[in-house]
Amino acid sequence: MKYEVLVKSLKMKNLKSYIKSIEERSRRRIRRRYLIFEVIALSSYSKVSQDYLSKLIKDSYRELFGTLDTSLSGISLITYNNELRRGVIKFRSGYKAKLLLSLALAQYRGRIILRPIRTTGTLRKALKYMKA
Amino acid sequence: MSVDTNSRITEINEDIARIYKILGYRYVINSSLSEPTKIGEVHFIPRVNVSRDELLSSLSKFIKLRNNGVITALIVNDAEDLKEYVKFRKALTIASLSKNALLRLGRRGRDKLVGLKLPVELCIKDIVLSSGKFLKGLQGVINDLIKERIELIITPCPEKPYEIVHPLILESLLITLDVPEDIAIKSVRDVPLRIIEGLGDIE
Image (cartoon, rainbow over all chains, first blue to last red; front, side, top):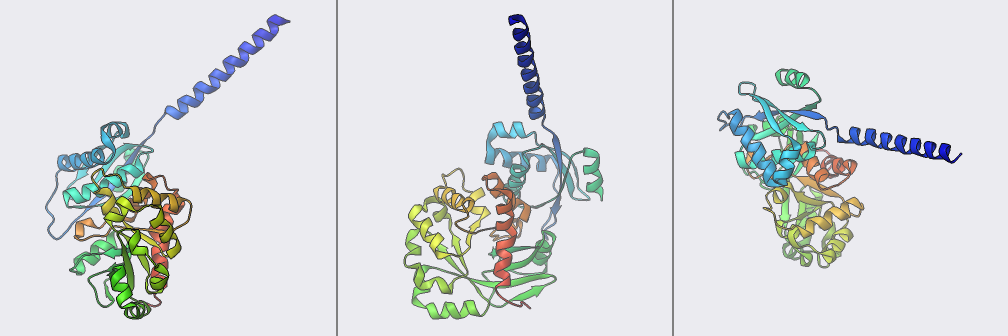
């Protein structure tokens, strides 16, 4: 009898830890997001390069939220089309508000206007919206 | 459709109107205008910034201005600017918090702000470009906003065209400061629109 109770309690313990591990796994999984943005031309507009934009956005993010948060957010400018003046920024979900706020600082520092267009879950869709 | 309640751009032209339109703004309240104008689809409405002393010295003038469709904004630097606010409340549309107020507005000042029963205006520029200073006043105002003691308006306050910020970025500022999303949307879209609606028909 005692043996059966012990087995049952062990099973319960295993079950609990199994459920906990599943919950933690789902919590740990951070999805990628893609933000499509546009650089609005001012009358004094001169073309900006992808490297310049990438540095500008990352530096602005770092200035506002620090180095650790910058690496955790995983932001990177994937592509920027100079003719369309549109680009795609990859970031981890949950960091959208912070990324958008850093765009404001990027505007002040770079003297350009950035318009967020849309956020997607896949790069394919992001590229589609970028060219649309 | 959004409203920029505190534009400080001195040269209003088609290029500025185009930028505002692309970013989703339809109404712009500008402090350098004397009469309302419309360029393209964007309405430009005049605004007057006043200090407490100016307001008390010529109160009837500001009441008249407000009744004629001009937005009157009290610039609040500290609690002293809100002293005896009952006297001049009827001449005002908005209470605008300056950089100094964000730094040092204490509980006493915030209680007066609540008593004023006017929308409180903040500039995103003052917060983003605060260079790491402890914004004691901002923290208190955000707490009051979350408790729904005050209504907040977040504006870009642009002085140059590149300082005009998309409304989504304004919302994200409040979300980053732990304000619930519905209150953030209300602060960026609904409260400024209600000020415009209070002016009646705009041509």
